[in-house]
Image 1 (cartoon, rainbow, N blue to C red):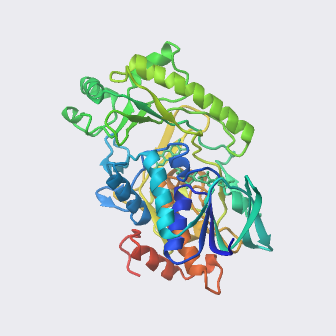
Image 2: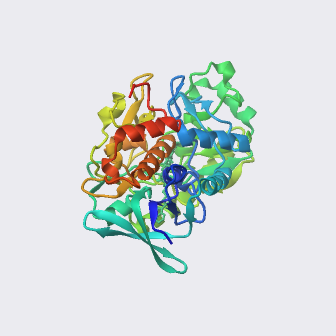
Image 3: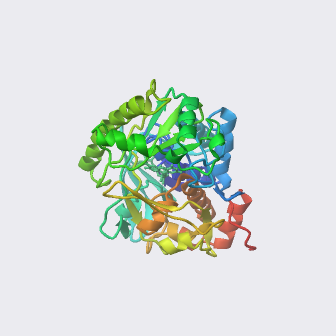
Length: 450
Ligand SMILES: Cc1cc2nc3c(=O)[nH]c(=O)nc-3n(C[C@H](O)[C@H](O)[C@H](O)COP(=O)(O)OP(=O)(O)OC[C@H]3O[C@@H](n4cnc5c(N)ncnc54)[C@H](O)[C@@H]3O)c2cc1C
C-alpha cells in the first residue's frame, strides 16, 4: 500500500491531530498505532483532565484540540472547559476516555486517513540522512510503508532514535518524572465531600470562598492533607505522594484519581515498565481502601476503571534545531516560527521523592513553541510531535500537556502536507505558509501580525 505523503507513527493525541491535519490538507496519510484504539496516554493510560486551554480569561489553544472538546461535549463526553477550583491553572477540561476513542476513529474516517491499528513500529527505513519509510510488525508479519514525510508521535522518539537522530532523556542525571497508574472511581457522594471541605477549608487548595465549595464548583481537589497523613501514620498508605489529588469527570458521581507514584522507572526498559505496572496495581488497591476508609463521600466507591497501562510522564526526546528551555517557558517567550502556545506551569513530580515543584509562566502570559523544536538535527523527511519534541527536562514538564501536544501534532501534520509537493524537505519549509495555514485552521498563535 502507498506510497504516502505522510506517515504518522503513534496514535496518541499528537499523532491523531497530525494525521487529521495532514489528510485535511489533501495529503495521502497513514496513521500507525500499536493498540486497537487511538488516544494514547489519554485513553490507554486514562490520563486527564486536559490542562489548560486558557491563560487567565483568554483561550490560547484552538484548532483541532478545541474541535475535539466541542465534539466530545456534543456527544456528552465532556462538560467543556471548567474553572480550575484547585487554583493551579485557569481551566481544566474533563473528558470521557471511552467516547474520546470513538470520536478519534470517526475523525480519521471523515478526514480520509488510512488507519492501521495493531501495528508495532520496528525501524525507520533510511537512505543516508533521509527517512524514506518505516517497518512495522503486525499479526500477519512485517510490513514496510514509504512516505515523503514521517511524523514521529510515539512519545518515546522511537522513529527518530531508530533513524540515528540525537536524543536525550530526563534530567541532568537521566532521571525521568515518576509513572502513575490512573483510576476512575465511583460512586462518589459529591455533597458529602463538599460538606467536609466547607467544614475544613484549610484542607483544600482553592481560591473559592468557603460557601462556594460545592460539588458543581469542585473541578479539581488538591489537599486533604490531614486524612492522608493520618493514613500514612497508621501505615495504611505507603505511596510516595504528599497530597490527595482528585479531578471531576464528566459525570457527577465519578472522579479521576492521579495519585499513584512509581519512582525511578526507566520507561525504555520493558522489565522496569513491568515493575511499574505491578507496583501501580498494588498502589491502586491502597488508594481505593484509603478513599473508602478515610474520605467522606467515598465509602461506597470502587475502581470503575484503571489505565490499561501505567502513565509515563517523560522518556526520550529529540535534539532538535531548537531546544525549548525553562526560561523560555517562565518568561512567556515568543518565537517568529511559533506553532503552539501554552500557559501551563513547569510541573515536575520529583523523580525520586514525594513532592512536586512548580514554576509558573508570567501572569496572564503564554509561551510559544517554535517549529524548530519539531525538527531533528541533521535528518530529512522527519518531524516529531508530542511529548518527544526538543526541550529540556524542565520545559518538557510544561510542554508535555495534552492541549499542547494536540497543537504540536496539528502543526506537524500541516507541515507534512505543505511539504508533500515541495522541492524542500519538511524541516526547511516556508514557515510563513505553515503559520498562515495553522491560523486559518483555528490555531491560536497570538496577535502578532504576519
Ligand atoms: C500520570 C500522568 C499525568 C498527566 N496529567 C496530565 C493532565 O492532568 N493534563 C494533561 O493535559 N496532560 C497530562 N499528562 C500529560 C499528557 O497526558 C501526555 O504528555 C500526552 O498525552 C502525550 O501525548 P502524545 O501524543 O505525545 O503521546 P501518547 O499519548 O503517549 O501517544 C503515543 C502513541 O504512540 C503509540 N506507540 C508507541 N510506541 C509505538 C510503536 N512501537 N508502534 C506503534 N505505536 C506506538 C502509543 O501506543 C500511543 O498511542 C499526564 C501524563 C501522565 C503520564
